[in-house]
Image 1 (cartoon, rainbow, N blue to C red):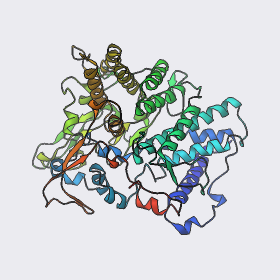
Image 2: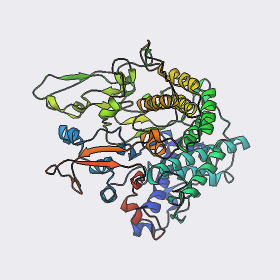
Image 3: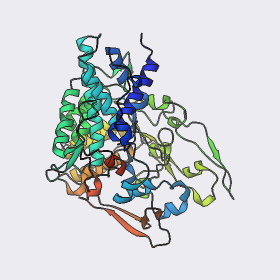
Length: 516
């Protein structure tokens, strides 16, 4: 029997070696042959299955795009309020869509380059697909399941990358740069960015294969949401087609996902949502500040709280090292602070006290779901109800749309007359459902939503993001200069984040480029 810990450790080394050789600027290292001592061959179906079991690394979505949304409340006032919380310059550059400085900062972003990013997931998927017909053991059903699951993993990774580093997919943009297409684990595979149209065809081909998964989410009555399943792939398909503004297909897959698993956490049930251990902070010149976080924050050392969230269809968590999701005033104003239990549990007032001793005027709120900086980002049952409601509203079924969104609200709003949304017409129904979506899944989906709102046939949901901040230099904000206005226009090319310069250098003449 293989020592699984040693296998995973060695395989991780192999994975990191791949990422370094593909995307590192170290040319001397690139010329060295791979040592056979750095990895072990994939020889059995159990090896491939173990690769897909690495939930401790595969769960993490480290997408920096949320900082550029109108959910993020960094502005001149909040910056002045607590500058010590905003010292990491790439976050400031991303928050105000600065392209050139973002390319030059010392750290590459983890979504693209790190051993914990999406290219790692692509490599794992390709390793499975390359070796399925070479390994021993298992049945044809085992191989079919692993094949479909690998295609889901790769499709999800490419969808994340395409919606972060590429322009929105439209007829106008389809010839723009997409992504490098990697179908193997070869270090020599071309890094040329193919067109956006080719990129999306690749994602759709992976999705078509992934939809062949026939493994249920519930196994022995418990959801195995860290692995591919019918509910997981249908949930991702619903998200994918919503992003493409194909409301008929998105509704179809949302219904399929909910038909298999529709469990919602009841925020009104004290056995499901409750507070964890109180925290007390010192306040210079003021009384100690005590606050409580939701129980999802309570376990700070492992994945138990994340893993136990009952709404996951596909276990993915936004995990970004800022430790501080600062909600904007616009986002905060969307909540009924007296009746919306999401505000009660997830908006922690004066959260910035968590970072140490402060004066009484320096408290800023924070959005907390799981520990500090982690929010569900994979498809969930809550998201499926929102997709269902939006698609029905956009297709003209107002009553059906309101019924769907009110199923969710019954689990989030205090019981009473305010639970059920009503609407006099289609436009009002769409507006209210989109507001509900923003309350339910802030930060993790907002960037993707802004892109699709501005590129569908409905002008009423267009959003121009406007922020007020100091002039930005390579050294950071210039607080000696007057505050200025920053805008992210509807068709801005800044809707594609730049690839870091270190990654461009490492392209080794293989045409890895930015769209700018």
